Length: 605
Ligand code: ADP
Image 1 (cartoon, protein in one colour):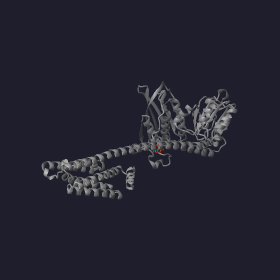
Image 2: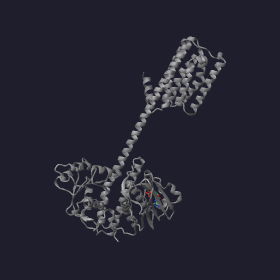
Image 3: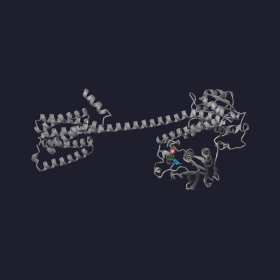
Image 4: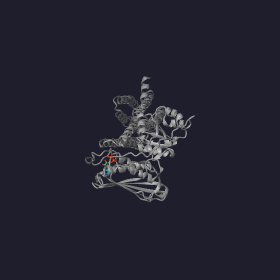
């Protein structure tokens, strides 16, 4: 009983190779069958030779199997048993057990099955051929020389044939059943693996997005406080230089987090392309303003040349296109010591209401050696290390660029002359929403200094703003960044506190963090909108979160927020957003302009 239990446990053990399990199972059944056949033979006093061979089998099979299992040499046991089966047992049983009319024919069928199931590779082929040839020889010999075959008595013929039939029938039955079980087991395992992989993928994404969130929150404080230092008119040049370095390092850290986040997303196959309608002019000025400063700090000329024929509103993934261009432009600035960096955009009508947008980024920088060009877009690859050692980078940027371009069905190519400069060209098909041409928005700039004076856009002494965030330092920084605007800025450290304050005062705008313990920003917004006795049911609420990612914009839109700001947030971004939502009668413009956003950032000198 114990042995049967152990055998059953072993047969069910999915860690054991399935061929080995099939082999043992077949062996056990064959052993039972052969024992019955041997007893039948012995009782009916049939051929001595046949009985002797059957006794040999009854001993050999379990001994060889047990030794094989114990010494982990199952393949050797399989080979010994099969060789004995094909070359000794079958011929003896055939010639001494009634030939074509005896039970051996069914055993030949069994042998084919056995060979097919437990052998692999050359052995399987060799034994298949041997079985075929030997059966043929046996049949032929019996046909030509019937006297070579020891015939059964009529009674023995029936007994032998019946036993063989039943044993082989049982073996086939068990085999089919067992194979089916194995198949289902494999299927179940494959399903489990897929679920596990998906869970891992989700866990990885959760980890990366929470890592991004956790890192963005303190960077928000660092960059915000740093901006306050940079705003100080009486700060010494040295302090300003240090603060500028903090700024650069903070932004570098941020782009590193973004790159790692995007790279892991692409690897996990969860990077989605989210096409939206976008204004080419707005997108370009945003990009230009982000790169302009860096270029001017290095004394590089920055030429922007946008073909006036490009349609003004296109349909595509604005966020990812911006990311691609910023990556290429940042590289161009990074790897150029003197001269210029250029951005050129043109479009070609492709019929079906779309255009092929071709964007080239050129530089007069260090260039790339011809032999390095094929590997340029590989992840973690950085070329020309001896020259680039002191230029910061991870080697992820271009890999992300290529993968994003691939996801959008576009192409990216590079042309470069070592020591002269490079040109990266991206071609993307974009839908056309408004055909009206974008017009002349060419921009050229050069020069610049490192000190930037903050000029607040407006003052609004009568306006009241509430900022809700569970991070005290973030609250303090954001409040201070808005200090010049003279608004009354209240703060709340939780959703509950914000709801409480919303009963006592009416605000003009509420800035709300998303991830807060107990009540998150989305729930707080929902409650605010239906709050009994609430004074802020219709007040614009802007989400101010460390949750980055292209999908979040949709999430917050759907949740009913009136705007979306990602930490780290600058004073300019805060002011821009507030300008959009504050009642016009409370706002006094201090810059005499109605421009918004980054465009307003000016350089002294
Ligand atoms: P990183 O800049 O972080 O090293 P990238 O993937 O953006 O990573 O670029 C990979 C490599 O390609 C860089 O290390 C650099 O050797 C080379 N490279 C990229 N852009 C330029 C360029 N405009 N001029 C010269 N070399 C470049």
